[in-house]
Image 1 (tube, rainbow, N blue to C red):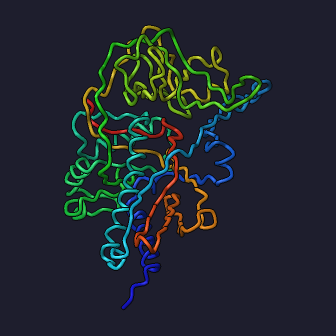
Image 2: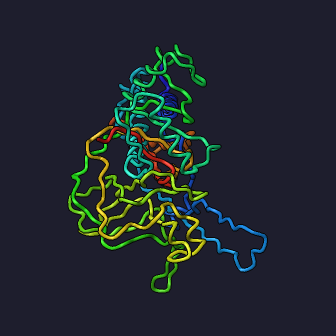
Image 3: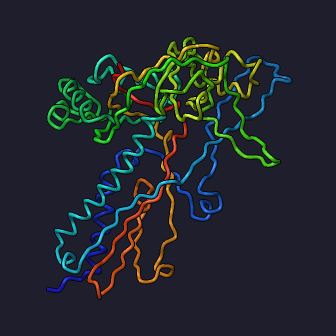
Length: 421
């Protein structure tokens, strides 16, 4: 019986989609923002979207003259990643359905693995809730510590949370839970299937793509002068007004030699305060190095917005974003946390990390001789397959492409769990 090669290509694309859908573990739990083609092109692939506002409480009956301004901050969402899997198929290979099935699985695995890896790396490098446990994560108490930290920070408990454990940590925890009652998980599932399920307020997932966070060189670094960040929605330059990214700030230090992006540190006396009530949680605020600007300047997450500066260096509207008790003191020595290289597990409030889904204008009218198939997956990512070939060569060129961006919308609502020292 003759094989319909065109039909086989269609089936091949369907199997790629099916495999991709099944393996995008992290992307399925992230928020999705679809950026249409026209907006992307006319905005240099970046749009600015509002950060969640925080209200200000005033006490008493008479509030005359106490009204505060509304300060709405913005976060950039950027399309910047094009992942491809490109290969050739001969007229002989197109005859074998099993060969096509294997190649479809390989394509789905490659594209989904890259997306998962990029998301895991983003949180591992920029998430600011750092839970440092005494031993390799192995029990309920380790994940519950992440839950406690999020609750102390008043991250909404009514919104879903996700935990992505490396395989070793997941298996240790499932063993620990084998004789305990779990929500949505039986002891048999925990023991035989290594399934945790809904655990300590998190929907948990076993992953094989969590990165190893390198150890810091732990250089002696001090803060150069007392510093804090004043939130500002927009800035003006040469008569042009543009939005400002307030997720982090520039910290001036004695030296950045030996410091790397992803390093974690605390500052003596700088404690985190909760997002809404501004209560001191008793935990030192953990900071992440996001970028090394030069020999004495580095970008850090999160911004340092001190509660004790409201009414002094900050207006009440600016103070609604307070996240620490006080400014970074002059000459304070940074205390490094990641003193050993370790594989991390990541967690987030669903929606704090986002997939920006883009489109590329590919169609048969513009690219003569090529056929195109496209579909949008449940994670919001569009997959496009381009197929072109010639009878003279007997070879078909296939290109599978995804176009997306990843953004940590609120680094103060996601983080990592590991044994760091």
